Length: 91
Image 1 (cartoon, rainbow, N blue to C red):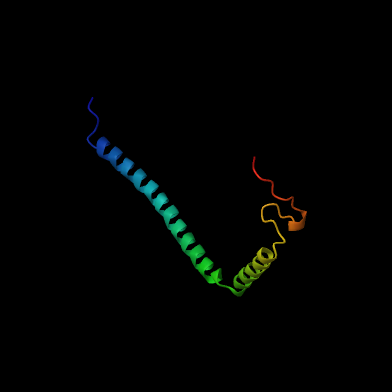
Image 2 (image 1 turned 30 degrees about the vertical axis):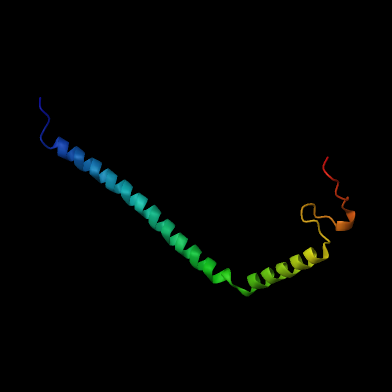
């Protein structure tokens, strides 16, 4: 017996509806990610040049300059320069 004439179009319509539903879910995820990215970018831009960040950057620069000029810190071992052993020549 031959199937009724509407089974193929009904199956095709069901597949199309399922695909559209899945694409709608993907669209919601993408829209949410874009909105979140925009919010975080705006928040980052707002606090990028705040007084606290500029002060901490300036303080770090001054302290690093003092340490380098006085050679009191071995940056790799974080020990004082007086406690370091003298350099040995390579054989």
